[in-house]
Length: 134
Image 1 (cartoon, rainbow, N blue to C red):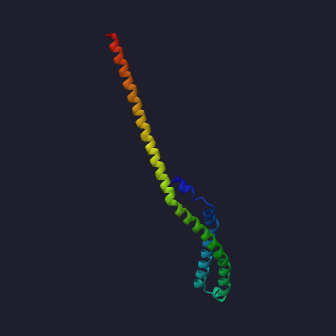
Image 2: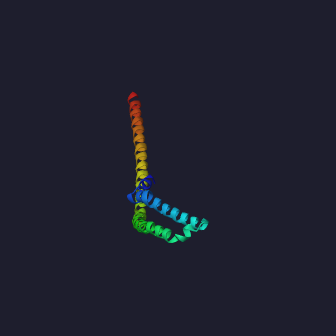
């Protein structure tokens, strides 16, 4: 699981966090500010210059939209590639865990067999010593 968390530090994720998210948020904040200012404007200044503000929002939003779309496509393809490799990765982790468990069982069995062999030899040695004394 830790490996999957570390894999999230990709270039596309960094670009989305550093550029994409602030760009979208600033565009939304500016658009909401213009709408709010237009609704609350008592002087009529914003309503008379609404074309200017709409053009400004479009100028900021047009390139931002193209950029975000390109970055989002790259990010989506990266995420789908990760999802496509997930079953193989999980299968490999299961096989690795099973191999570790099997190895631990084999080592425990070998240790028990070794201890049993040492006890058998010690008993045989003691039994030979008793037979020589008689």
